[in-house]
Image 1 (cartoon, helix red, strand yellow):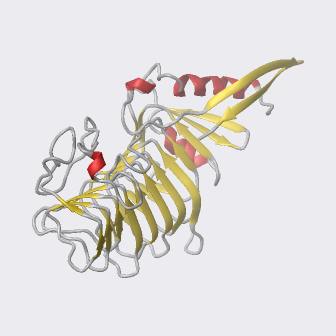
Image 2 (image 1 turned 120 degrees about the horizontal axis):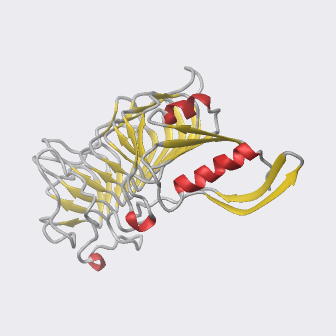
Image 3 (image 1 turned 180 degrees about the vertical axis):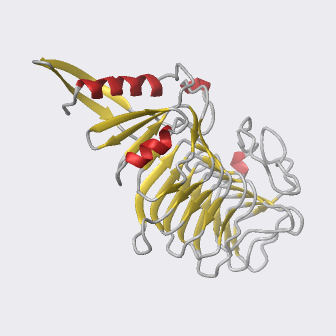
Length: 335
C-alpha cells in the first residue's frame, strides 16, 4: 500500500485513461515512474523528455501514438508500449510507434547497461546494442538488430518482428531469439557466437544464408543459393530450398513451401520475406511437424505467436482526507 499526493492521483487517473480500453485522443503520452514518484509528459517528445528525467531502474509507460526516438539510451530504463500493432479486440486503436533508431549504449567504457526491458513498441528504425547485459526485448517490431560492441551478453528477444537483418561485427555471447519473425538474415558469422533461434521464421534472400547458430523448431525459406553456415545445429526445422552443408542436423523436414501455412504459401521475394500483419503463420498440418521436444514447429509452437501486451492495472483504490492533503492507498499489478 502506498501514500501519494493529489497531483500523483491525477497522474494515475491519466495513466488509467490512457492505457485502459483505448486512448481517447491522439496525444502521445509518457508516464515516468521512479519509485513512488510519477510524472506525465505529453507530445511527440514525451519519451525523450521522460528518459532525460529517468534514473536507472525507472519505468516509462507509453500510450498509443507516435513518439520521437530518445536517441542514445545510457541508463537501464524499462520502456513499455501498448503493442507494435493495432489490436481492436484489446482496445488498441493504433500501436506505440517510435520514429527513428534507438541506440542502447553503455554510460562509460567500463560499465555495461544491465537488466532492463522494452515491450510493445514499433520502432521505425534499428535497435543498436553495445556493451549490454540481460536485455529483454518483448513483442516489439523494428528494422534491424545490430550488435556493435565487444561486450554483448544475455540478450533475449521474444515474439518480435525483425524486418531485415540481425548483424554485428563482434561475437555475440548469449542471444536467445524465440517465436520471432526475421525478414532477412542472421549475418553475424563468428566462430564463438552463442546464439539460439527457437520457433522462428527465418527467410533468406539476395544470394546469402544464415550465420553460425543453433536453430531449433524453425521454418526456413532459402532463396538464391542460400545456406546455413557450417558447424551450426539445425534440429526440428522445416527447410525450403536451403542448404545445411556441414551442419549438425537432426529430425528436419524439406518442403516446396506451398503446403506449410494454412493461410497461404511461404512468403518470398528476392530480398527476403516481408512480414504480413494479416497472416497468422499457423501450420496447415501441425500434427505433421512436431519436434523431438514434443512442441509444434514454427512461430505458433513453443511460446506461441501472441502479439498483445498486458497493461498496468490500479486496484483497490482508497481515498482519505488529512487536512488539505488527499491520501491514497492502492495496489498495482505491473508487467
